[in-house]
Length: 171
Image 1 (cartoon, helix red, strand yellow):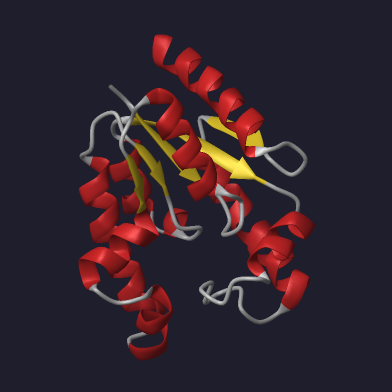
Image 2 (cartoon, rainbow, N blue to C red; image 1 turned 90 degrees about the vertical axis):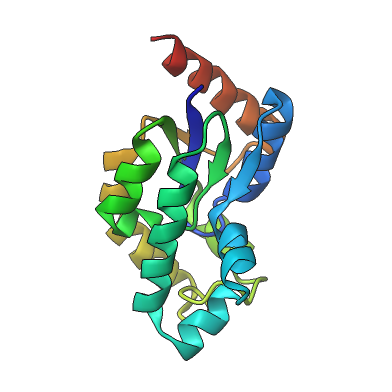
């Protein structure tokens, strides 16, 4: 059974939506950031601060390759997973990829309350807009499905994604 992989910016509600989808489909759920913390026994913020972004990205690739071997799982990815093609090659091998989007204002409102977002901690909404603009071509490149959750709740969004996932896996 194909995995359902959620990509998108930090604050796009990938984890919350992914958990809802996994529950509705009775599939296991993995969050790449949670797996990272569990596996490396270190927060992502600590890795950025102590070892730098490059070490984090290498470790993130190892997590992507490991989770890419899953079968029939829902996987919510960190926002920068698309920055390395090898991550997406591993994840797309057996998956339908969903780009979960939201407006810059919705993203900023969600991440500004959370200090665990090392790349978005400073810079305000302008930094969010710039990152979204920089990453949009990559999200678009890898996505099989796009779902915007700016103005709909998790339940409706997850139902729409499930319907699109089922349609993709029937092809």
